[in-house]
Length: 167
Image (cartoon, rainbow, N blue to C red; front, side, top):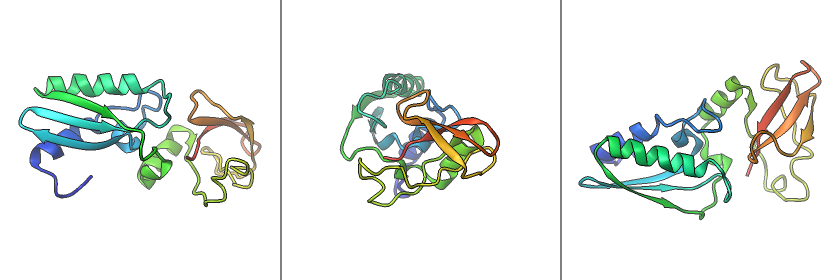
């Protein structure tokens, strides 16, 4: 969030930061990085959002939550969904990644450019279990409960867990 924001913009950002991600309620849509910009002009608010995936099924739920909250606060809201730049896990703070881990989801690991190559990712990346920190884990499915997560199994504590995929 920009420090040069007006009082109204700060209030809007603060309110939006109370909306939980419908798929990972341990973090908010602001912490996820989906809310990109807020512009306030009188009682009109423009909220710019970027989905984690172009077909993210939770996007409409997030938009409805923003619409409802802004209406409750007495604002007319325009929600603009943008796809450029594409959402990236780099938009999540380290604090947000720690919240994912505490919730039982392995946060996305830091990757280099070569890891992001579609033919090499993430074969040579150690994925740590969010429960015991063991790196003795294995991919069991490219998709978890949502498209933005993969399913892993920890050989250390014998727990299945999801990994929030990097992109």
